[in-house]
Structures are given as C-alpha cells and as structure tokens.
Image 1 (cartoon, rainbow, N blue to C red):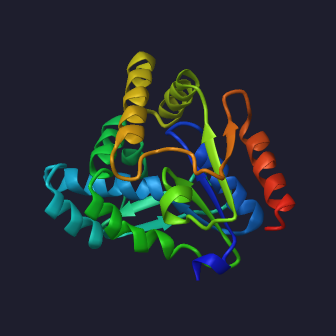
Image 2 (tube, one colour; image 1 turned 30 degrees about the vertical axis):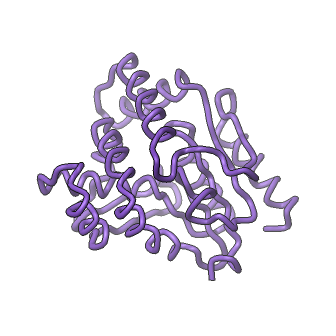
Length: 228
C-alpha cells in the first residue's frame, strides 16, 4: 500500500521547523500527517512516567509495542496534540528533558522496529506528509519526494526558546543551544537509523526562511514531480 500512496518525507534536526511545515502542507493538500518524533517522545515520557530505565531495552520494546497514544489536529491549532494513556501530554513532550530521553530510547533497535509498522500505517490516500529523522532513509525509502530540512543551531535554539515562552514555560537560551547541539550529535552518531539526508533528498535550509516560504518550496517541488 505504501508505494501507491503519494508521500512527502521531511527529515531533519529538532527546531528546523519540520512540525509547523508538515502540518501546514498536510492541511493545504488535505493529506494525512505523521509526526514520528512525537512517537519517540511519547515512548520516552511513558518510560519516565512508569519509572522504566531508558536503557532497559526489553522493557522499552514492550512499551513500544503496546503504546497507548492518540493524536488530534484541527485547522487553526498550533501543531497536533498528543494523548498518552488518555492524558493530553503535548506540552510535556516539548521539554528538553523528554527530547534527550527520546534520543536514548531511539537508539534501541527493537523499539524502532516495534514502532515501524505503526508509522507505515499512516500511509493512506490521498497522501501522507511524514515528519521525522529517518522517514526518507528507513520508514518510507520509496517516497517520491524526500526533504531534509535544516537550520543553524543558533537559529533553532532561538525558535525553541520563543516556543517555550509562548507556552508559558521558562527557558535558558545558552542551555537550549547546548542541548540542541547535544541532541544533534546523539541523533547523527547513533548506530541505528542515524539522522542524515537520504541520498535523493532535497536539502532545504530554513535559517533565513519563513514557514510559508519553506512550504512554498516543498509544494512547488511536489507539483514539479506530479504528486499533486
């Protein structure tokens, strides 16, 4: 089924704007949306909540296989909302602590395998926009359009800092910059599905671009490839 469904994958480091861009494109095209990074954050938060060690591979695999999650999105909302075991945990997922924990569970091969089928099930007509770190390299290797969205560490830290303030949370720009750099190194250096552009990915640097400009670039490319 996956190969017959038009898919746009958007991979890249945290803070590059993948979430906002993918949501806007999915809404514009009326396609389905997959935020795979949110799945790993949900898995990490579940482990934290149930006091499961992040390096307990057997337990993390079981949790990944039975993860009780739901997503909700509506036009006009900022991003999609995530529910873990019935509770809205969207705000908790955006904390740097959960982000770093997600990096730790993401290196567990059995957990990634357990979540693979769940991610691929999002590929349904009329099409899918998949946001993540290995969407084009692993999950949807046959996607007709693969984007690698990036931005400078400094710019991504500024965006995350602004996001935290808008959500009524506190933040420290220097610590955010350090945390984002550490997350990049962890994601790019892991042995299982490391963060990197697919060989046939179009690389888009969003440092000096607005969300609308990035979306226009991607939609224009999709049109040129006759996906829409």
